[in-house]
Image 1 (tube, rainbow, N blue to C red):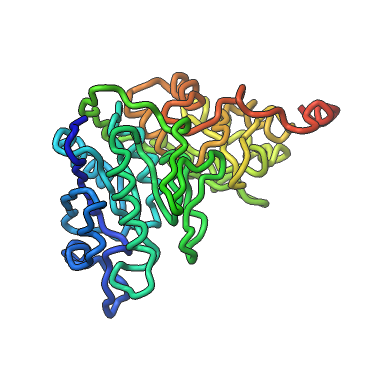
Image 2: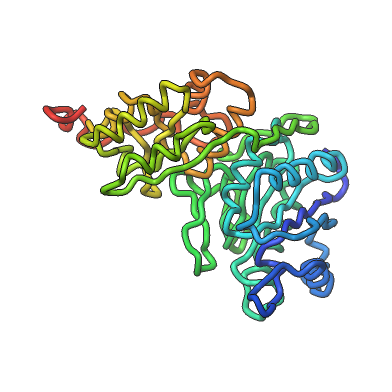
Length: 362
């Protein structure tokens, strides 16, 4: 890492932070974010590291983000990796958690920090969270570019691991949370980072390889009471390779719905990888805990443990892009590759599990 003052590349993809009002509502305004940052004295402070802005053309509302756009971000970072000490991806909040997980798998090894941020209100507004999120992100990168390796997301005074975060609120400034992994850092009077929660970088850092995503066909399906097996059958139909199944509770499914279970069995027999995660924000998918979870395992599903849906989707994309056979994908999806899950041996035993293992339960 260079001993001179750190230089940061801002990869501006679009999103609310730089939007302007139009007759159709808020839309990305080309050049708006750069102009506003140039006009505000706080962004020119000596405490703020030198930064350059690389803007997408066209700018995107993040609802329009695709794997091709993930690749554009990853390639922008890799192409400029030697010239900068850290990277700030300015992104819309709607799909920011998906992009954070995707970049964590796409860029490897990643020995410099990639930080994502955005805002719930545009920087042009009088009352906005944009200035605090942008400034604090730049200050974090300036202060810790030599230690903060990997992909992280900063929002509303909290720094999170990129593979652990999900959007939890569409209306509040505290839009994101990391339900199953503690925040990596907090921004109060001081900028505090819990370094034991951050992957250690290699030295000297080297440009990461980029894994292109989007060729694999993966999907997600949320279980609901009274579901028709035909709905799931459509999701699992060829050419799909992997599906994230958002289950009830601790990884449970309608075990008495034989048509549903038969659809799962037929899909896994064809090589489809089905990863069970939990609908609740907190907790882990334990397919051994209840008979309704064991039925999923018997049908061929594997546990995604405490992964978010965003991380599980990105992981399936990544593993299939490595040309792994389905059996190897099933094995690797349960391994902790980018800090995206808590290995089962590190999860405290569920309270009363032994008592639940009675007739009708497993």
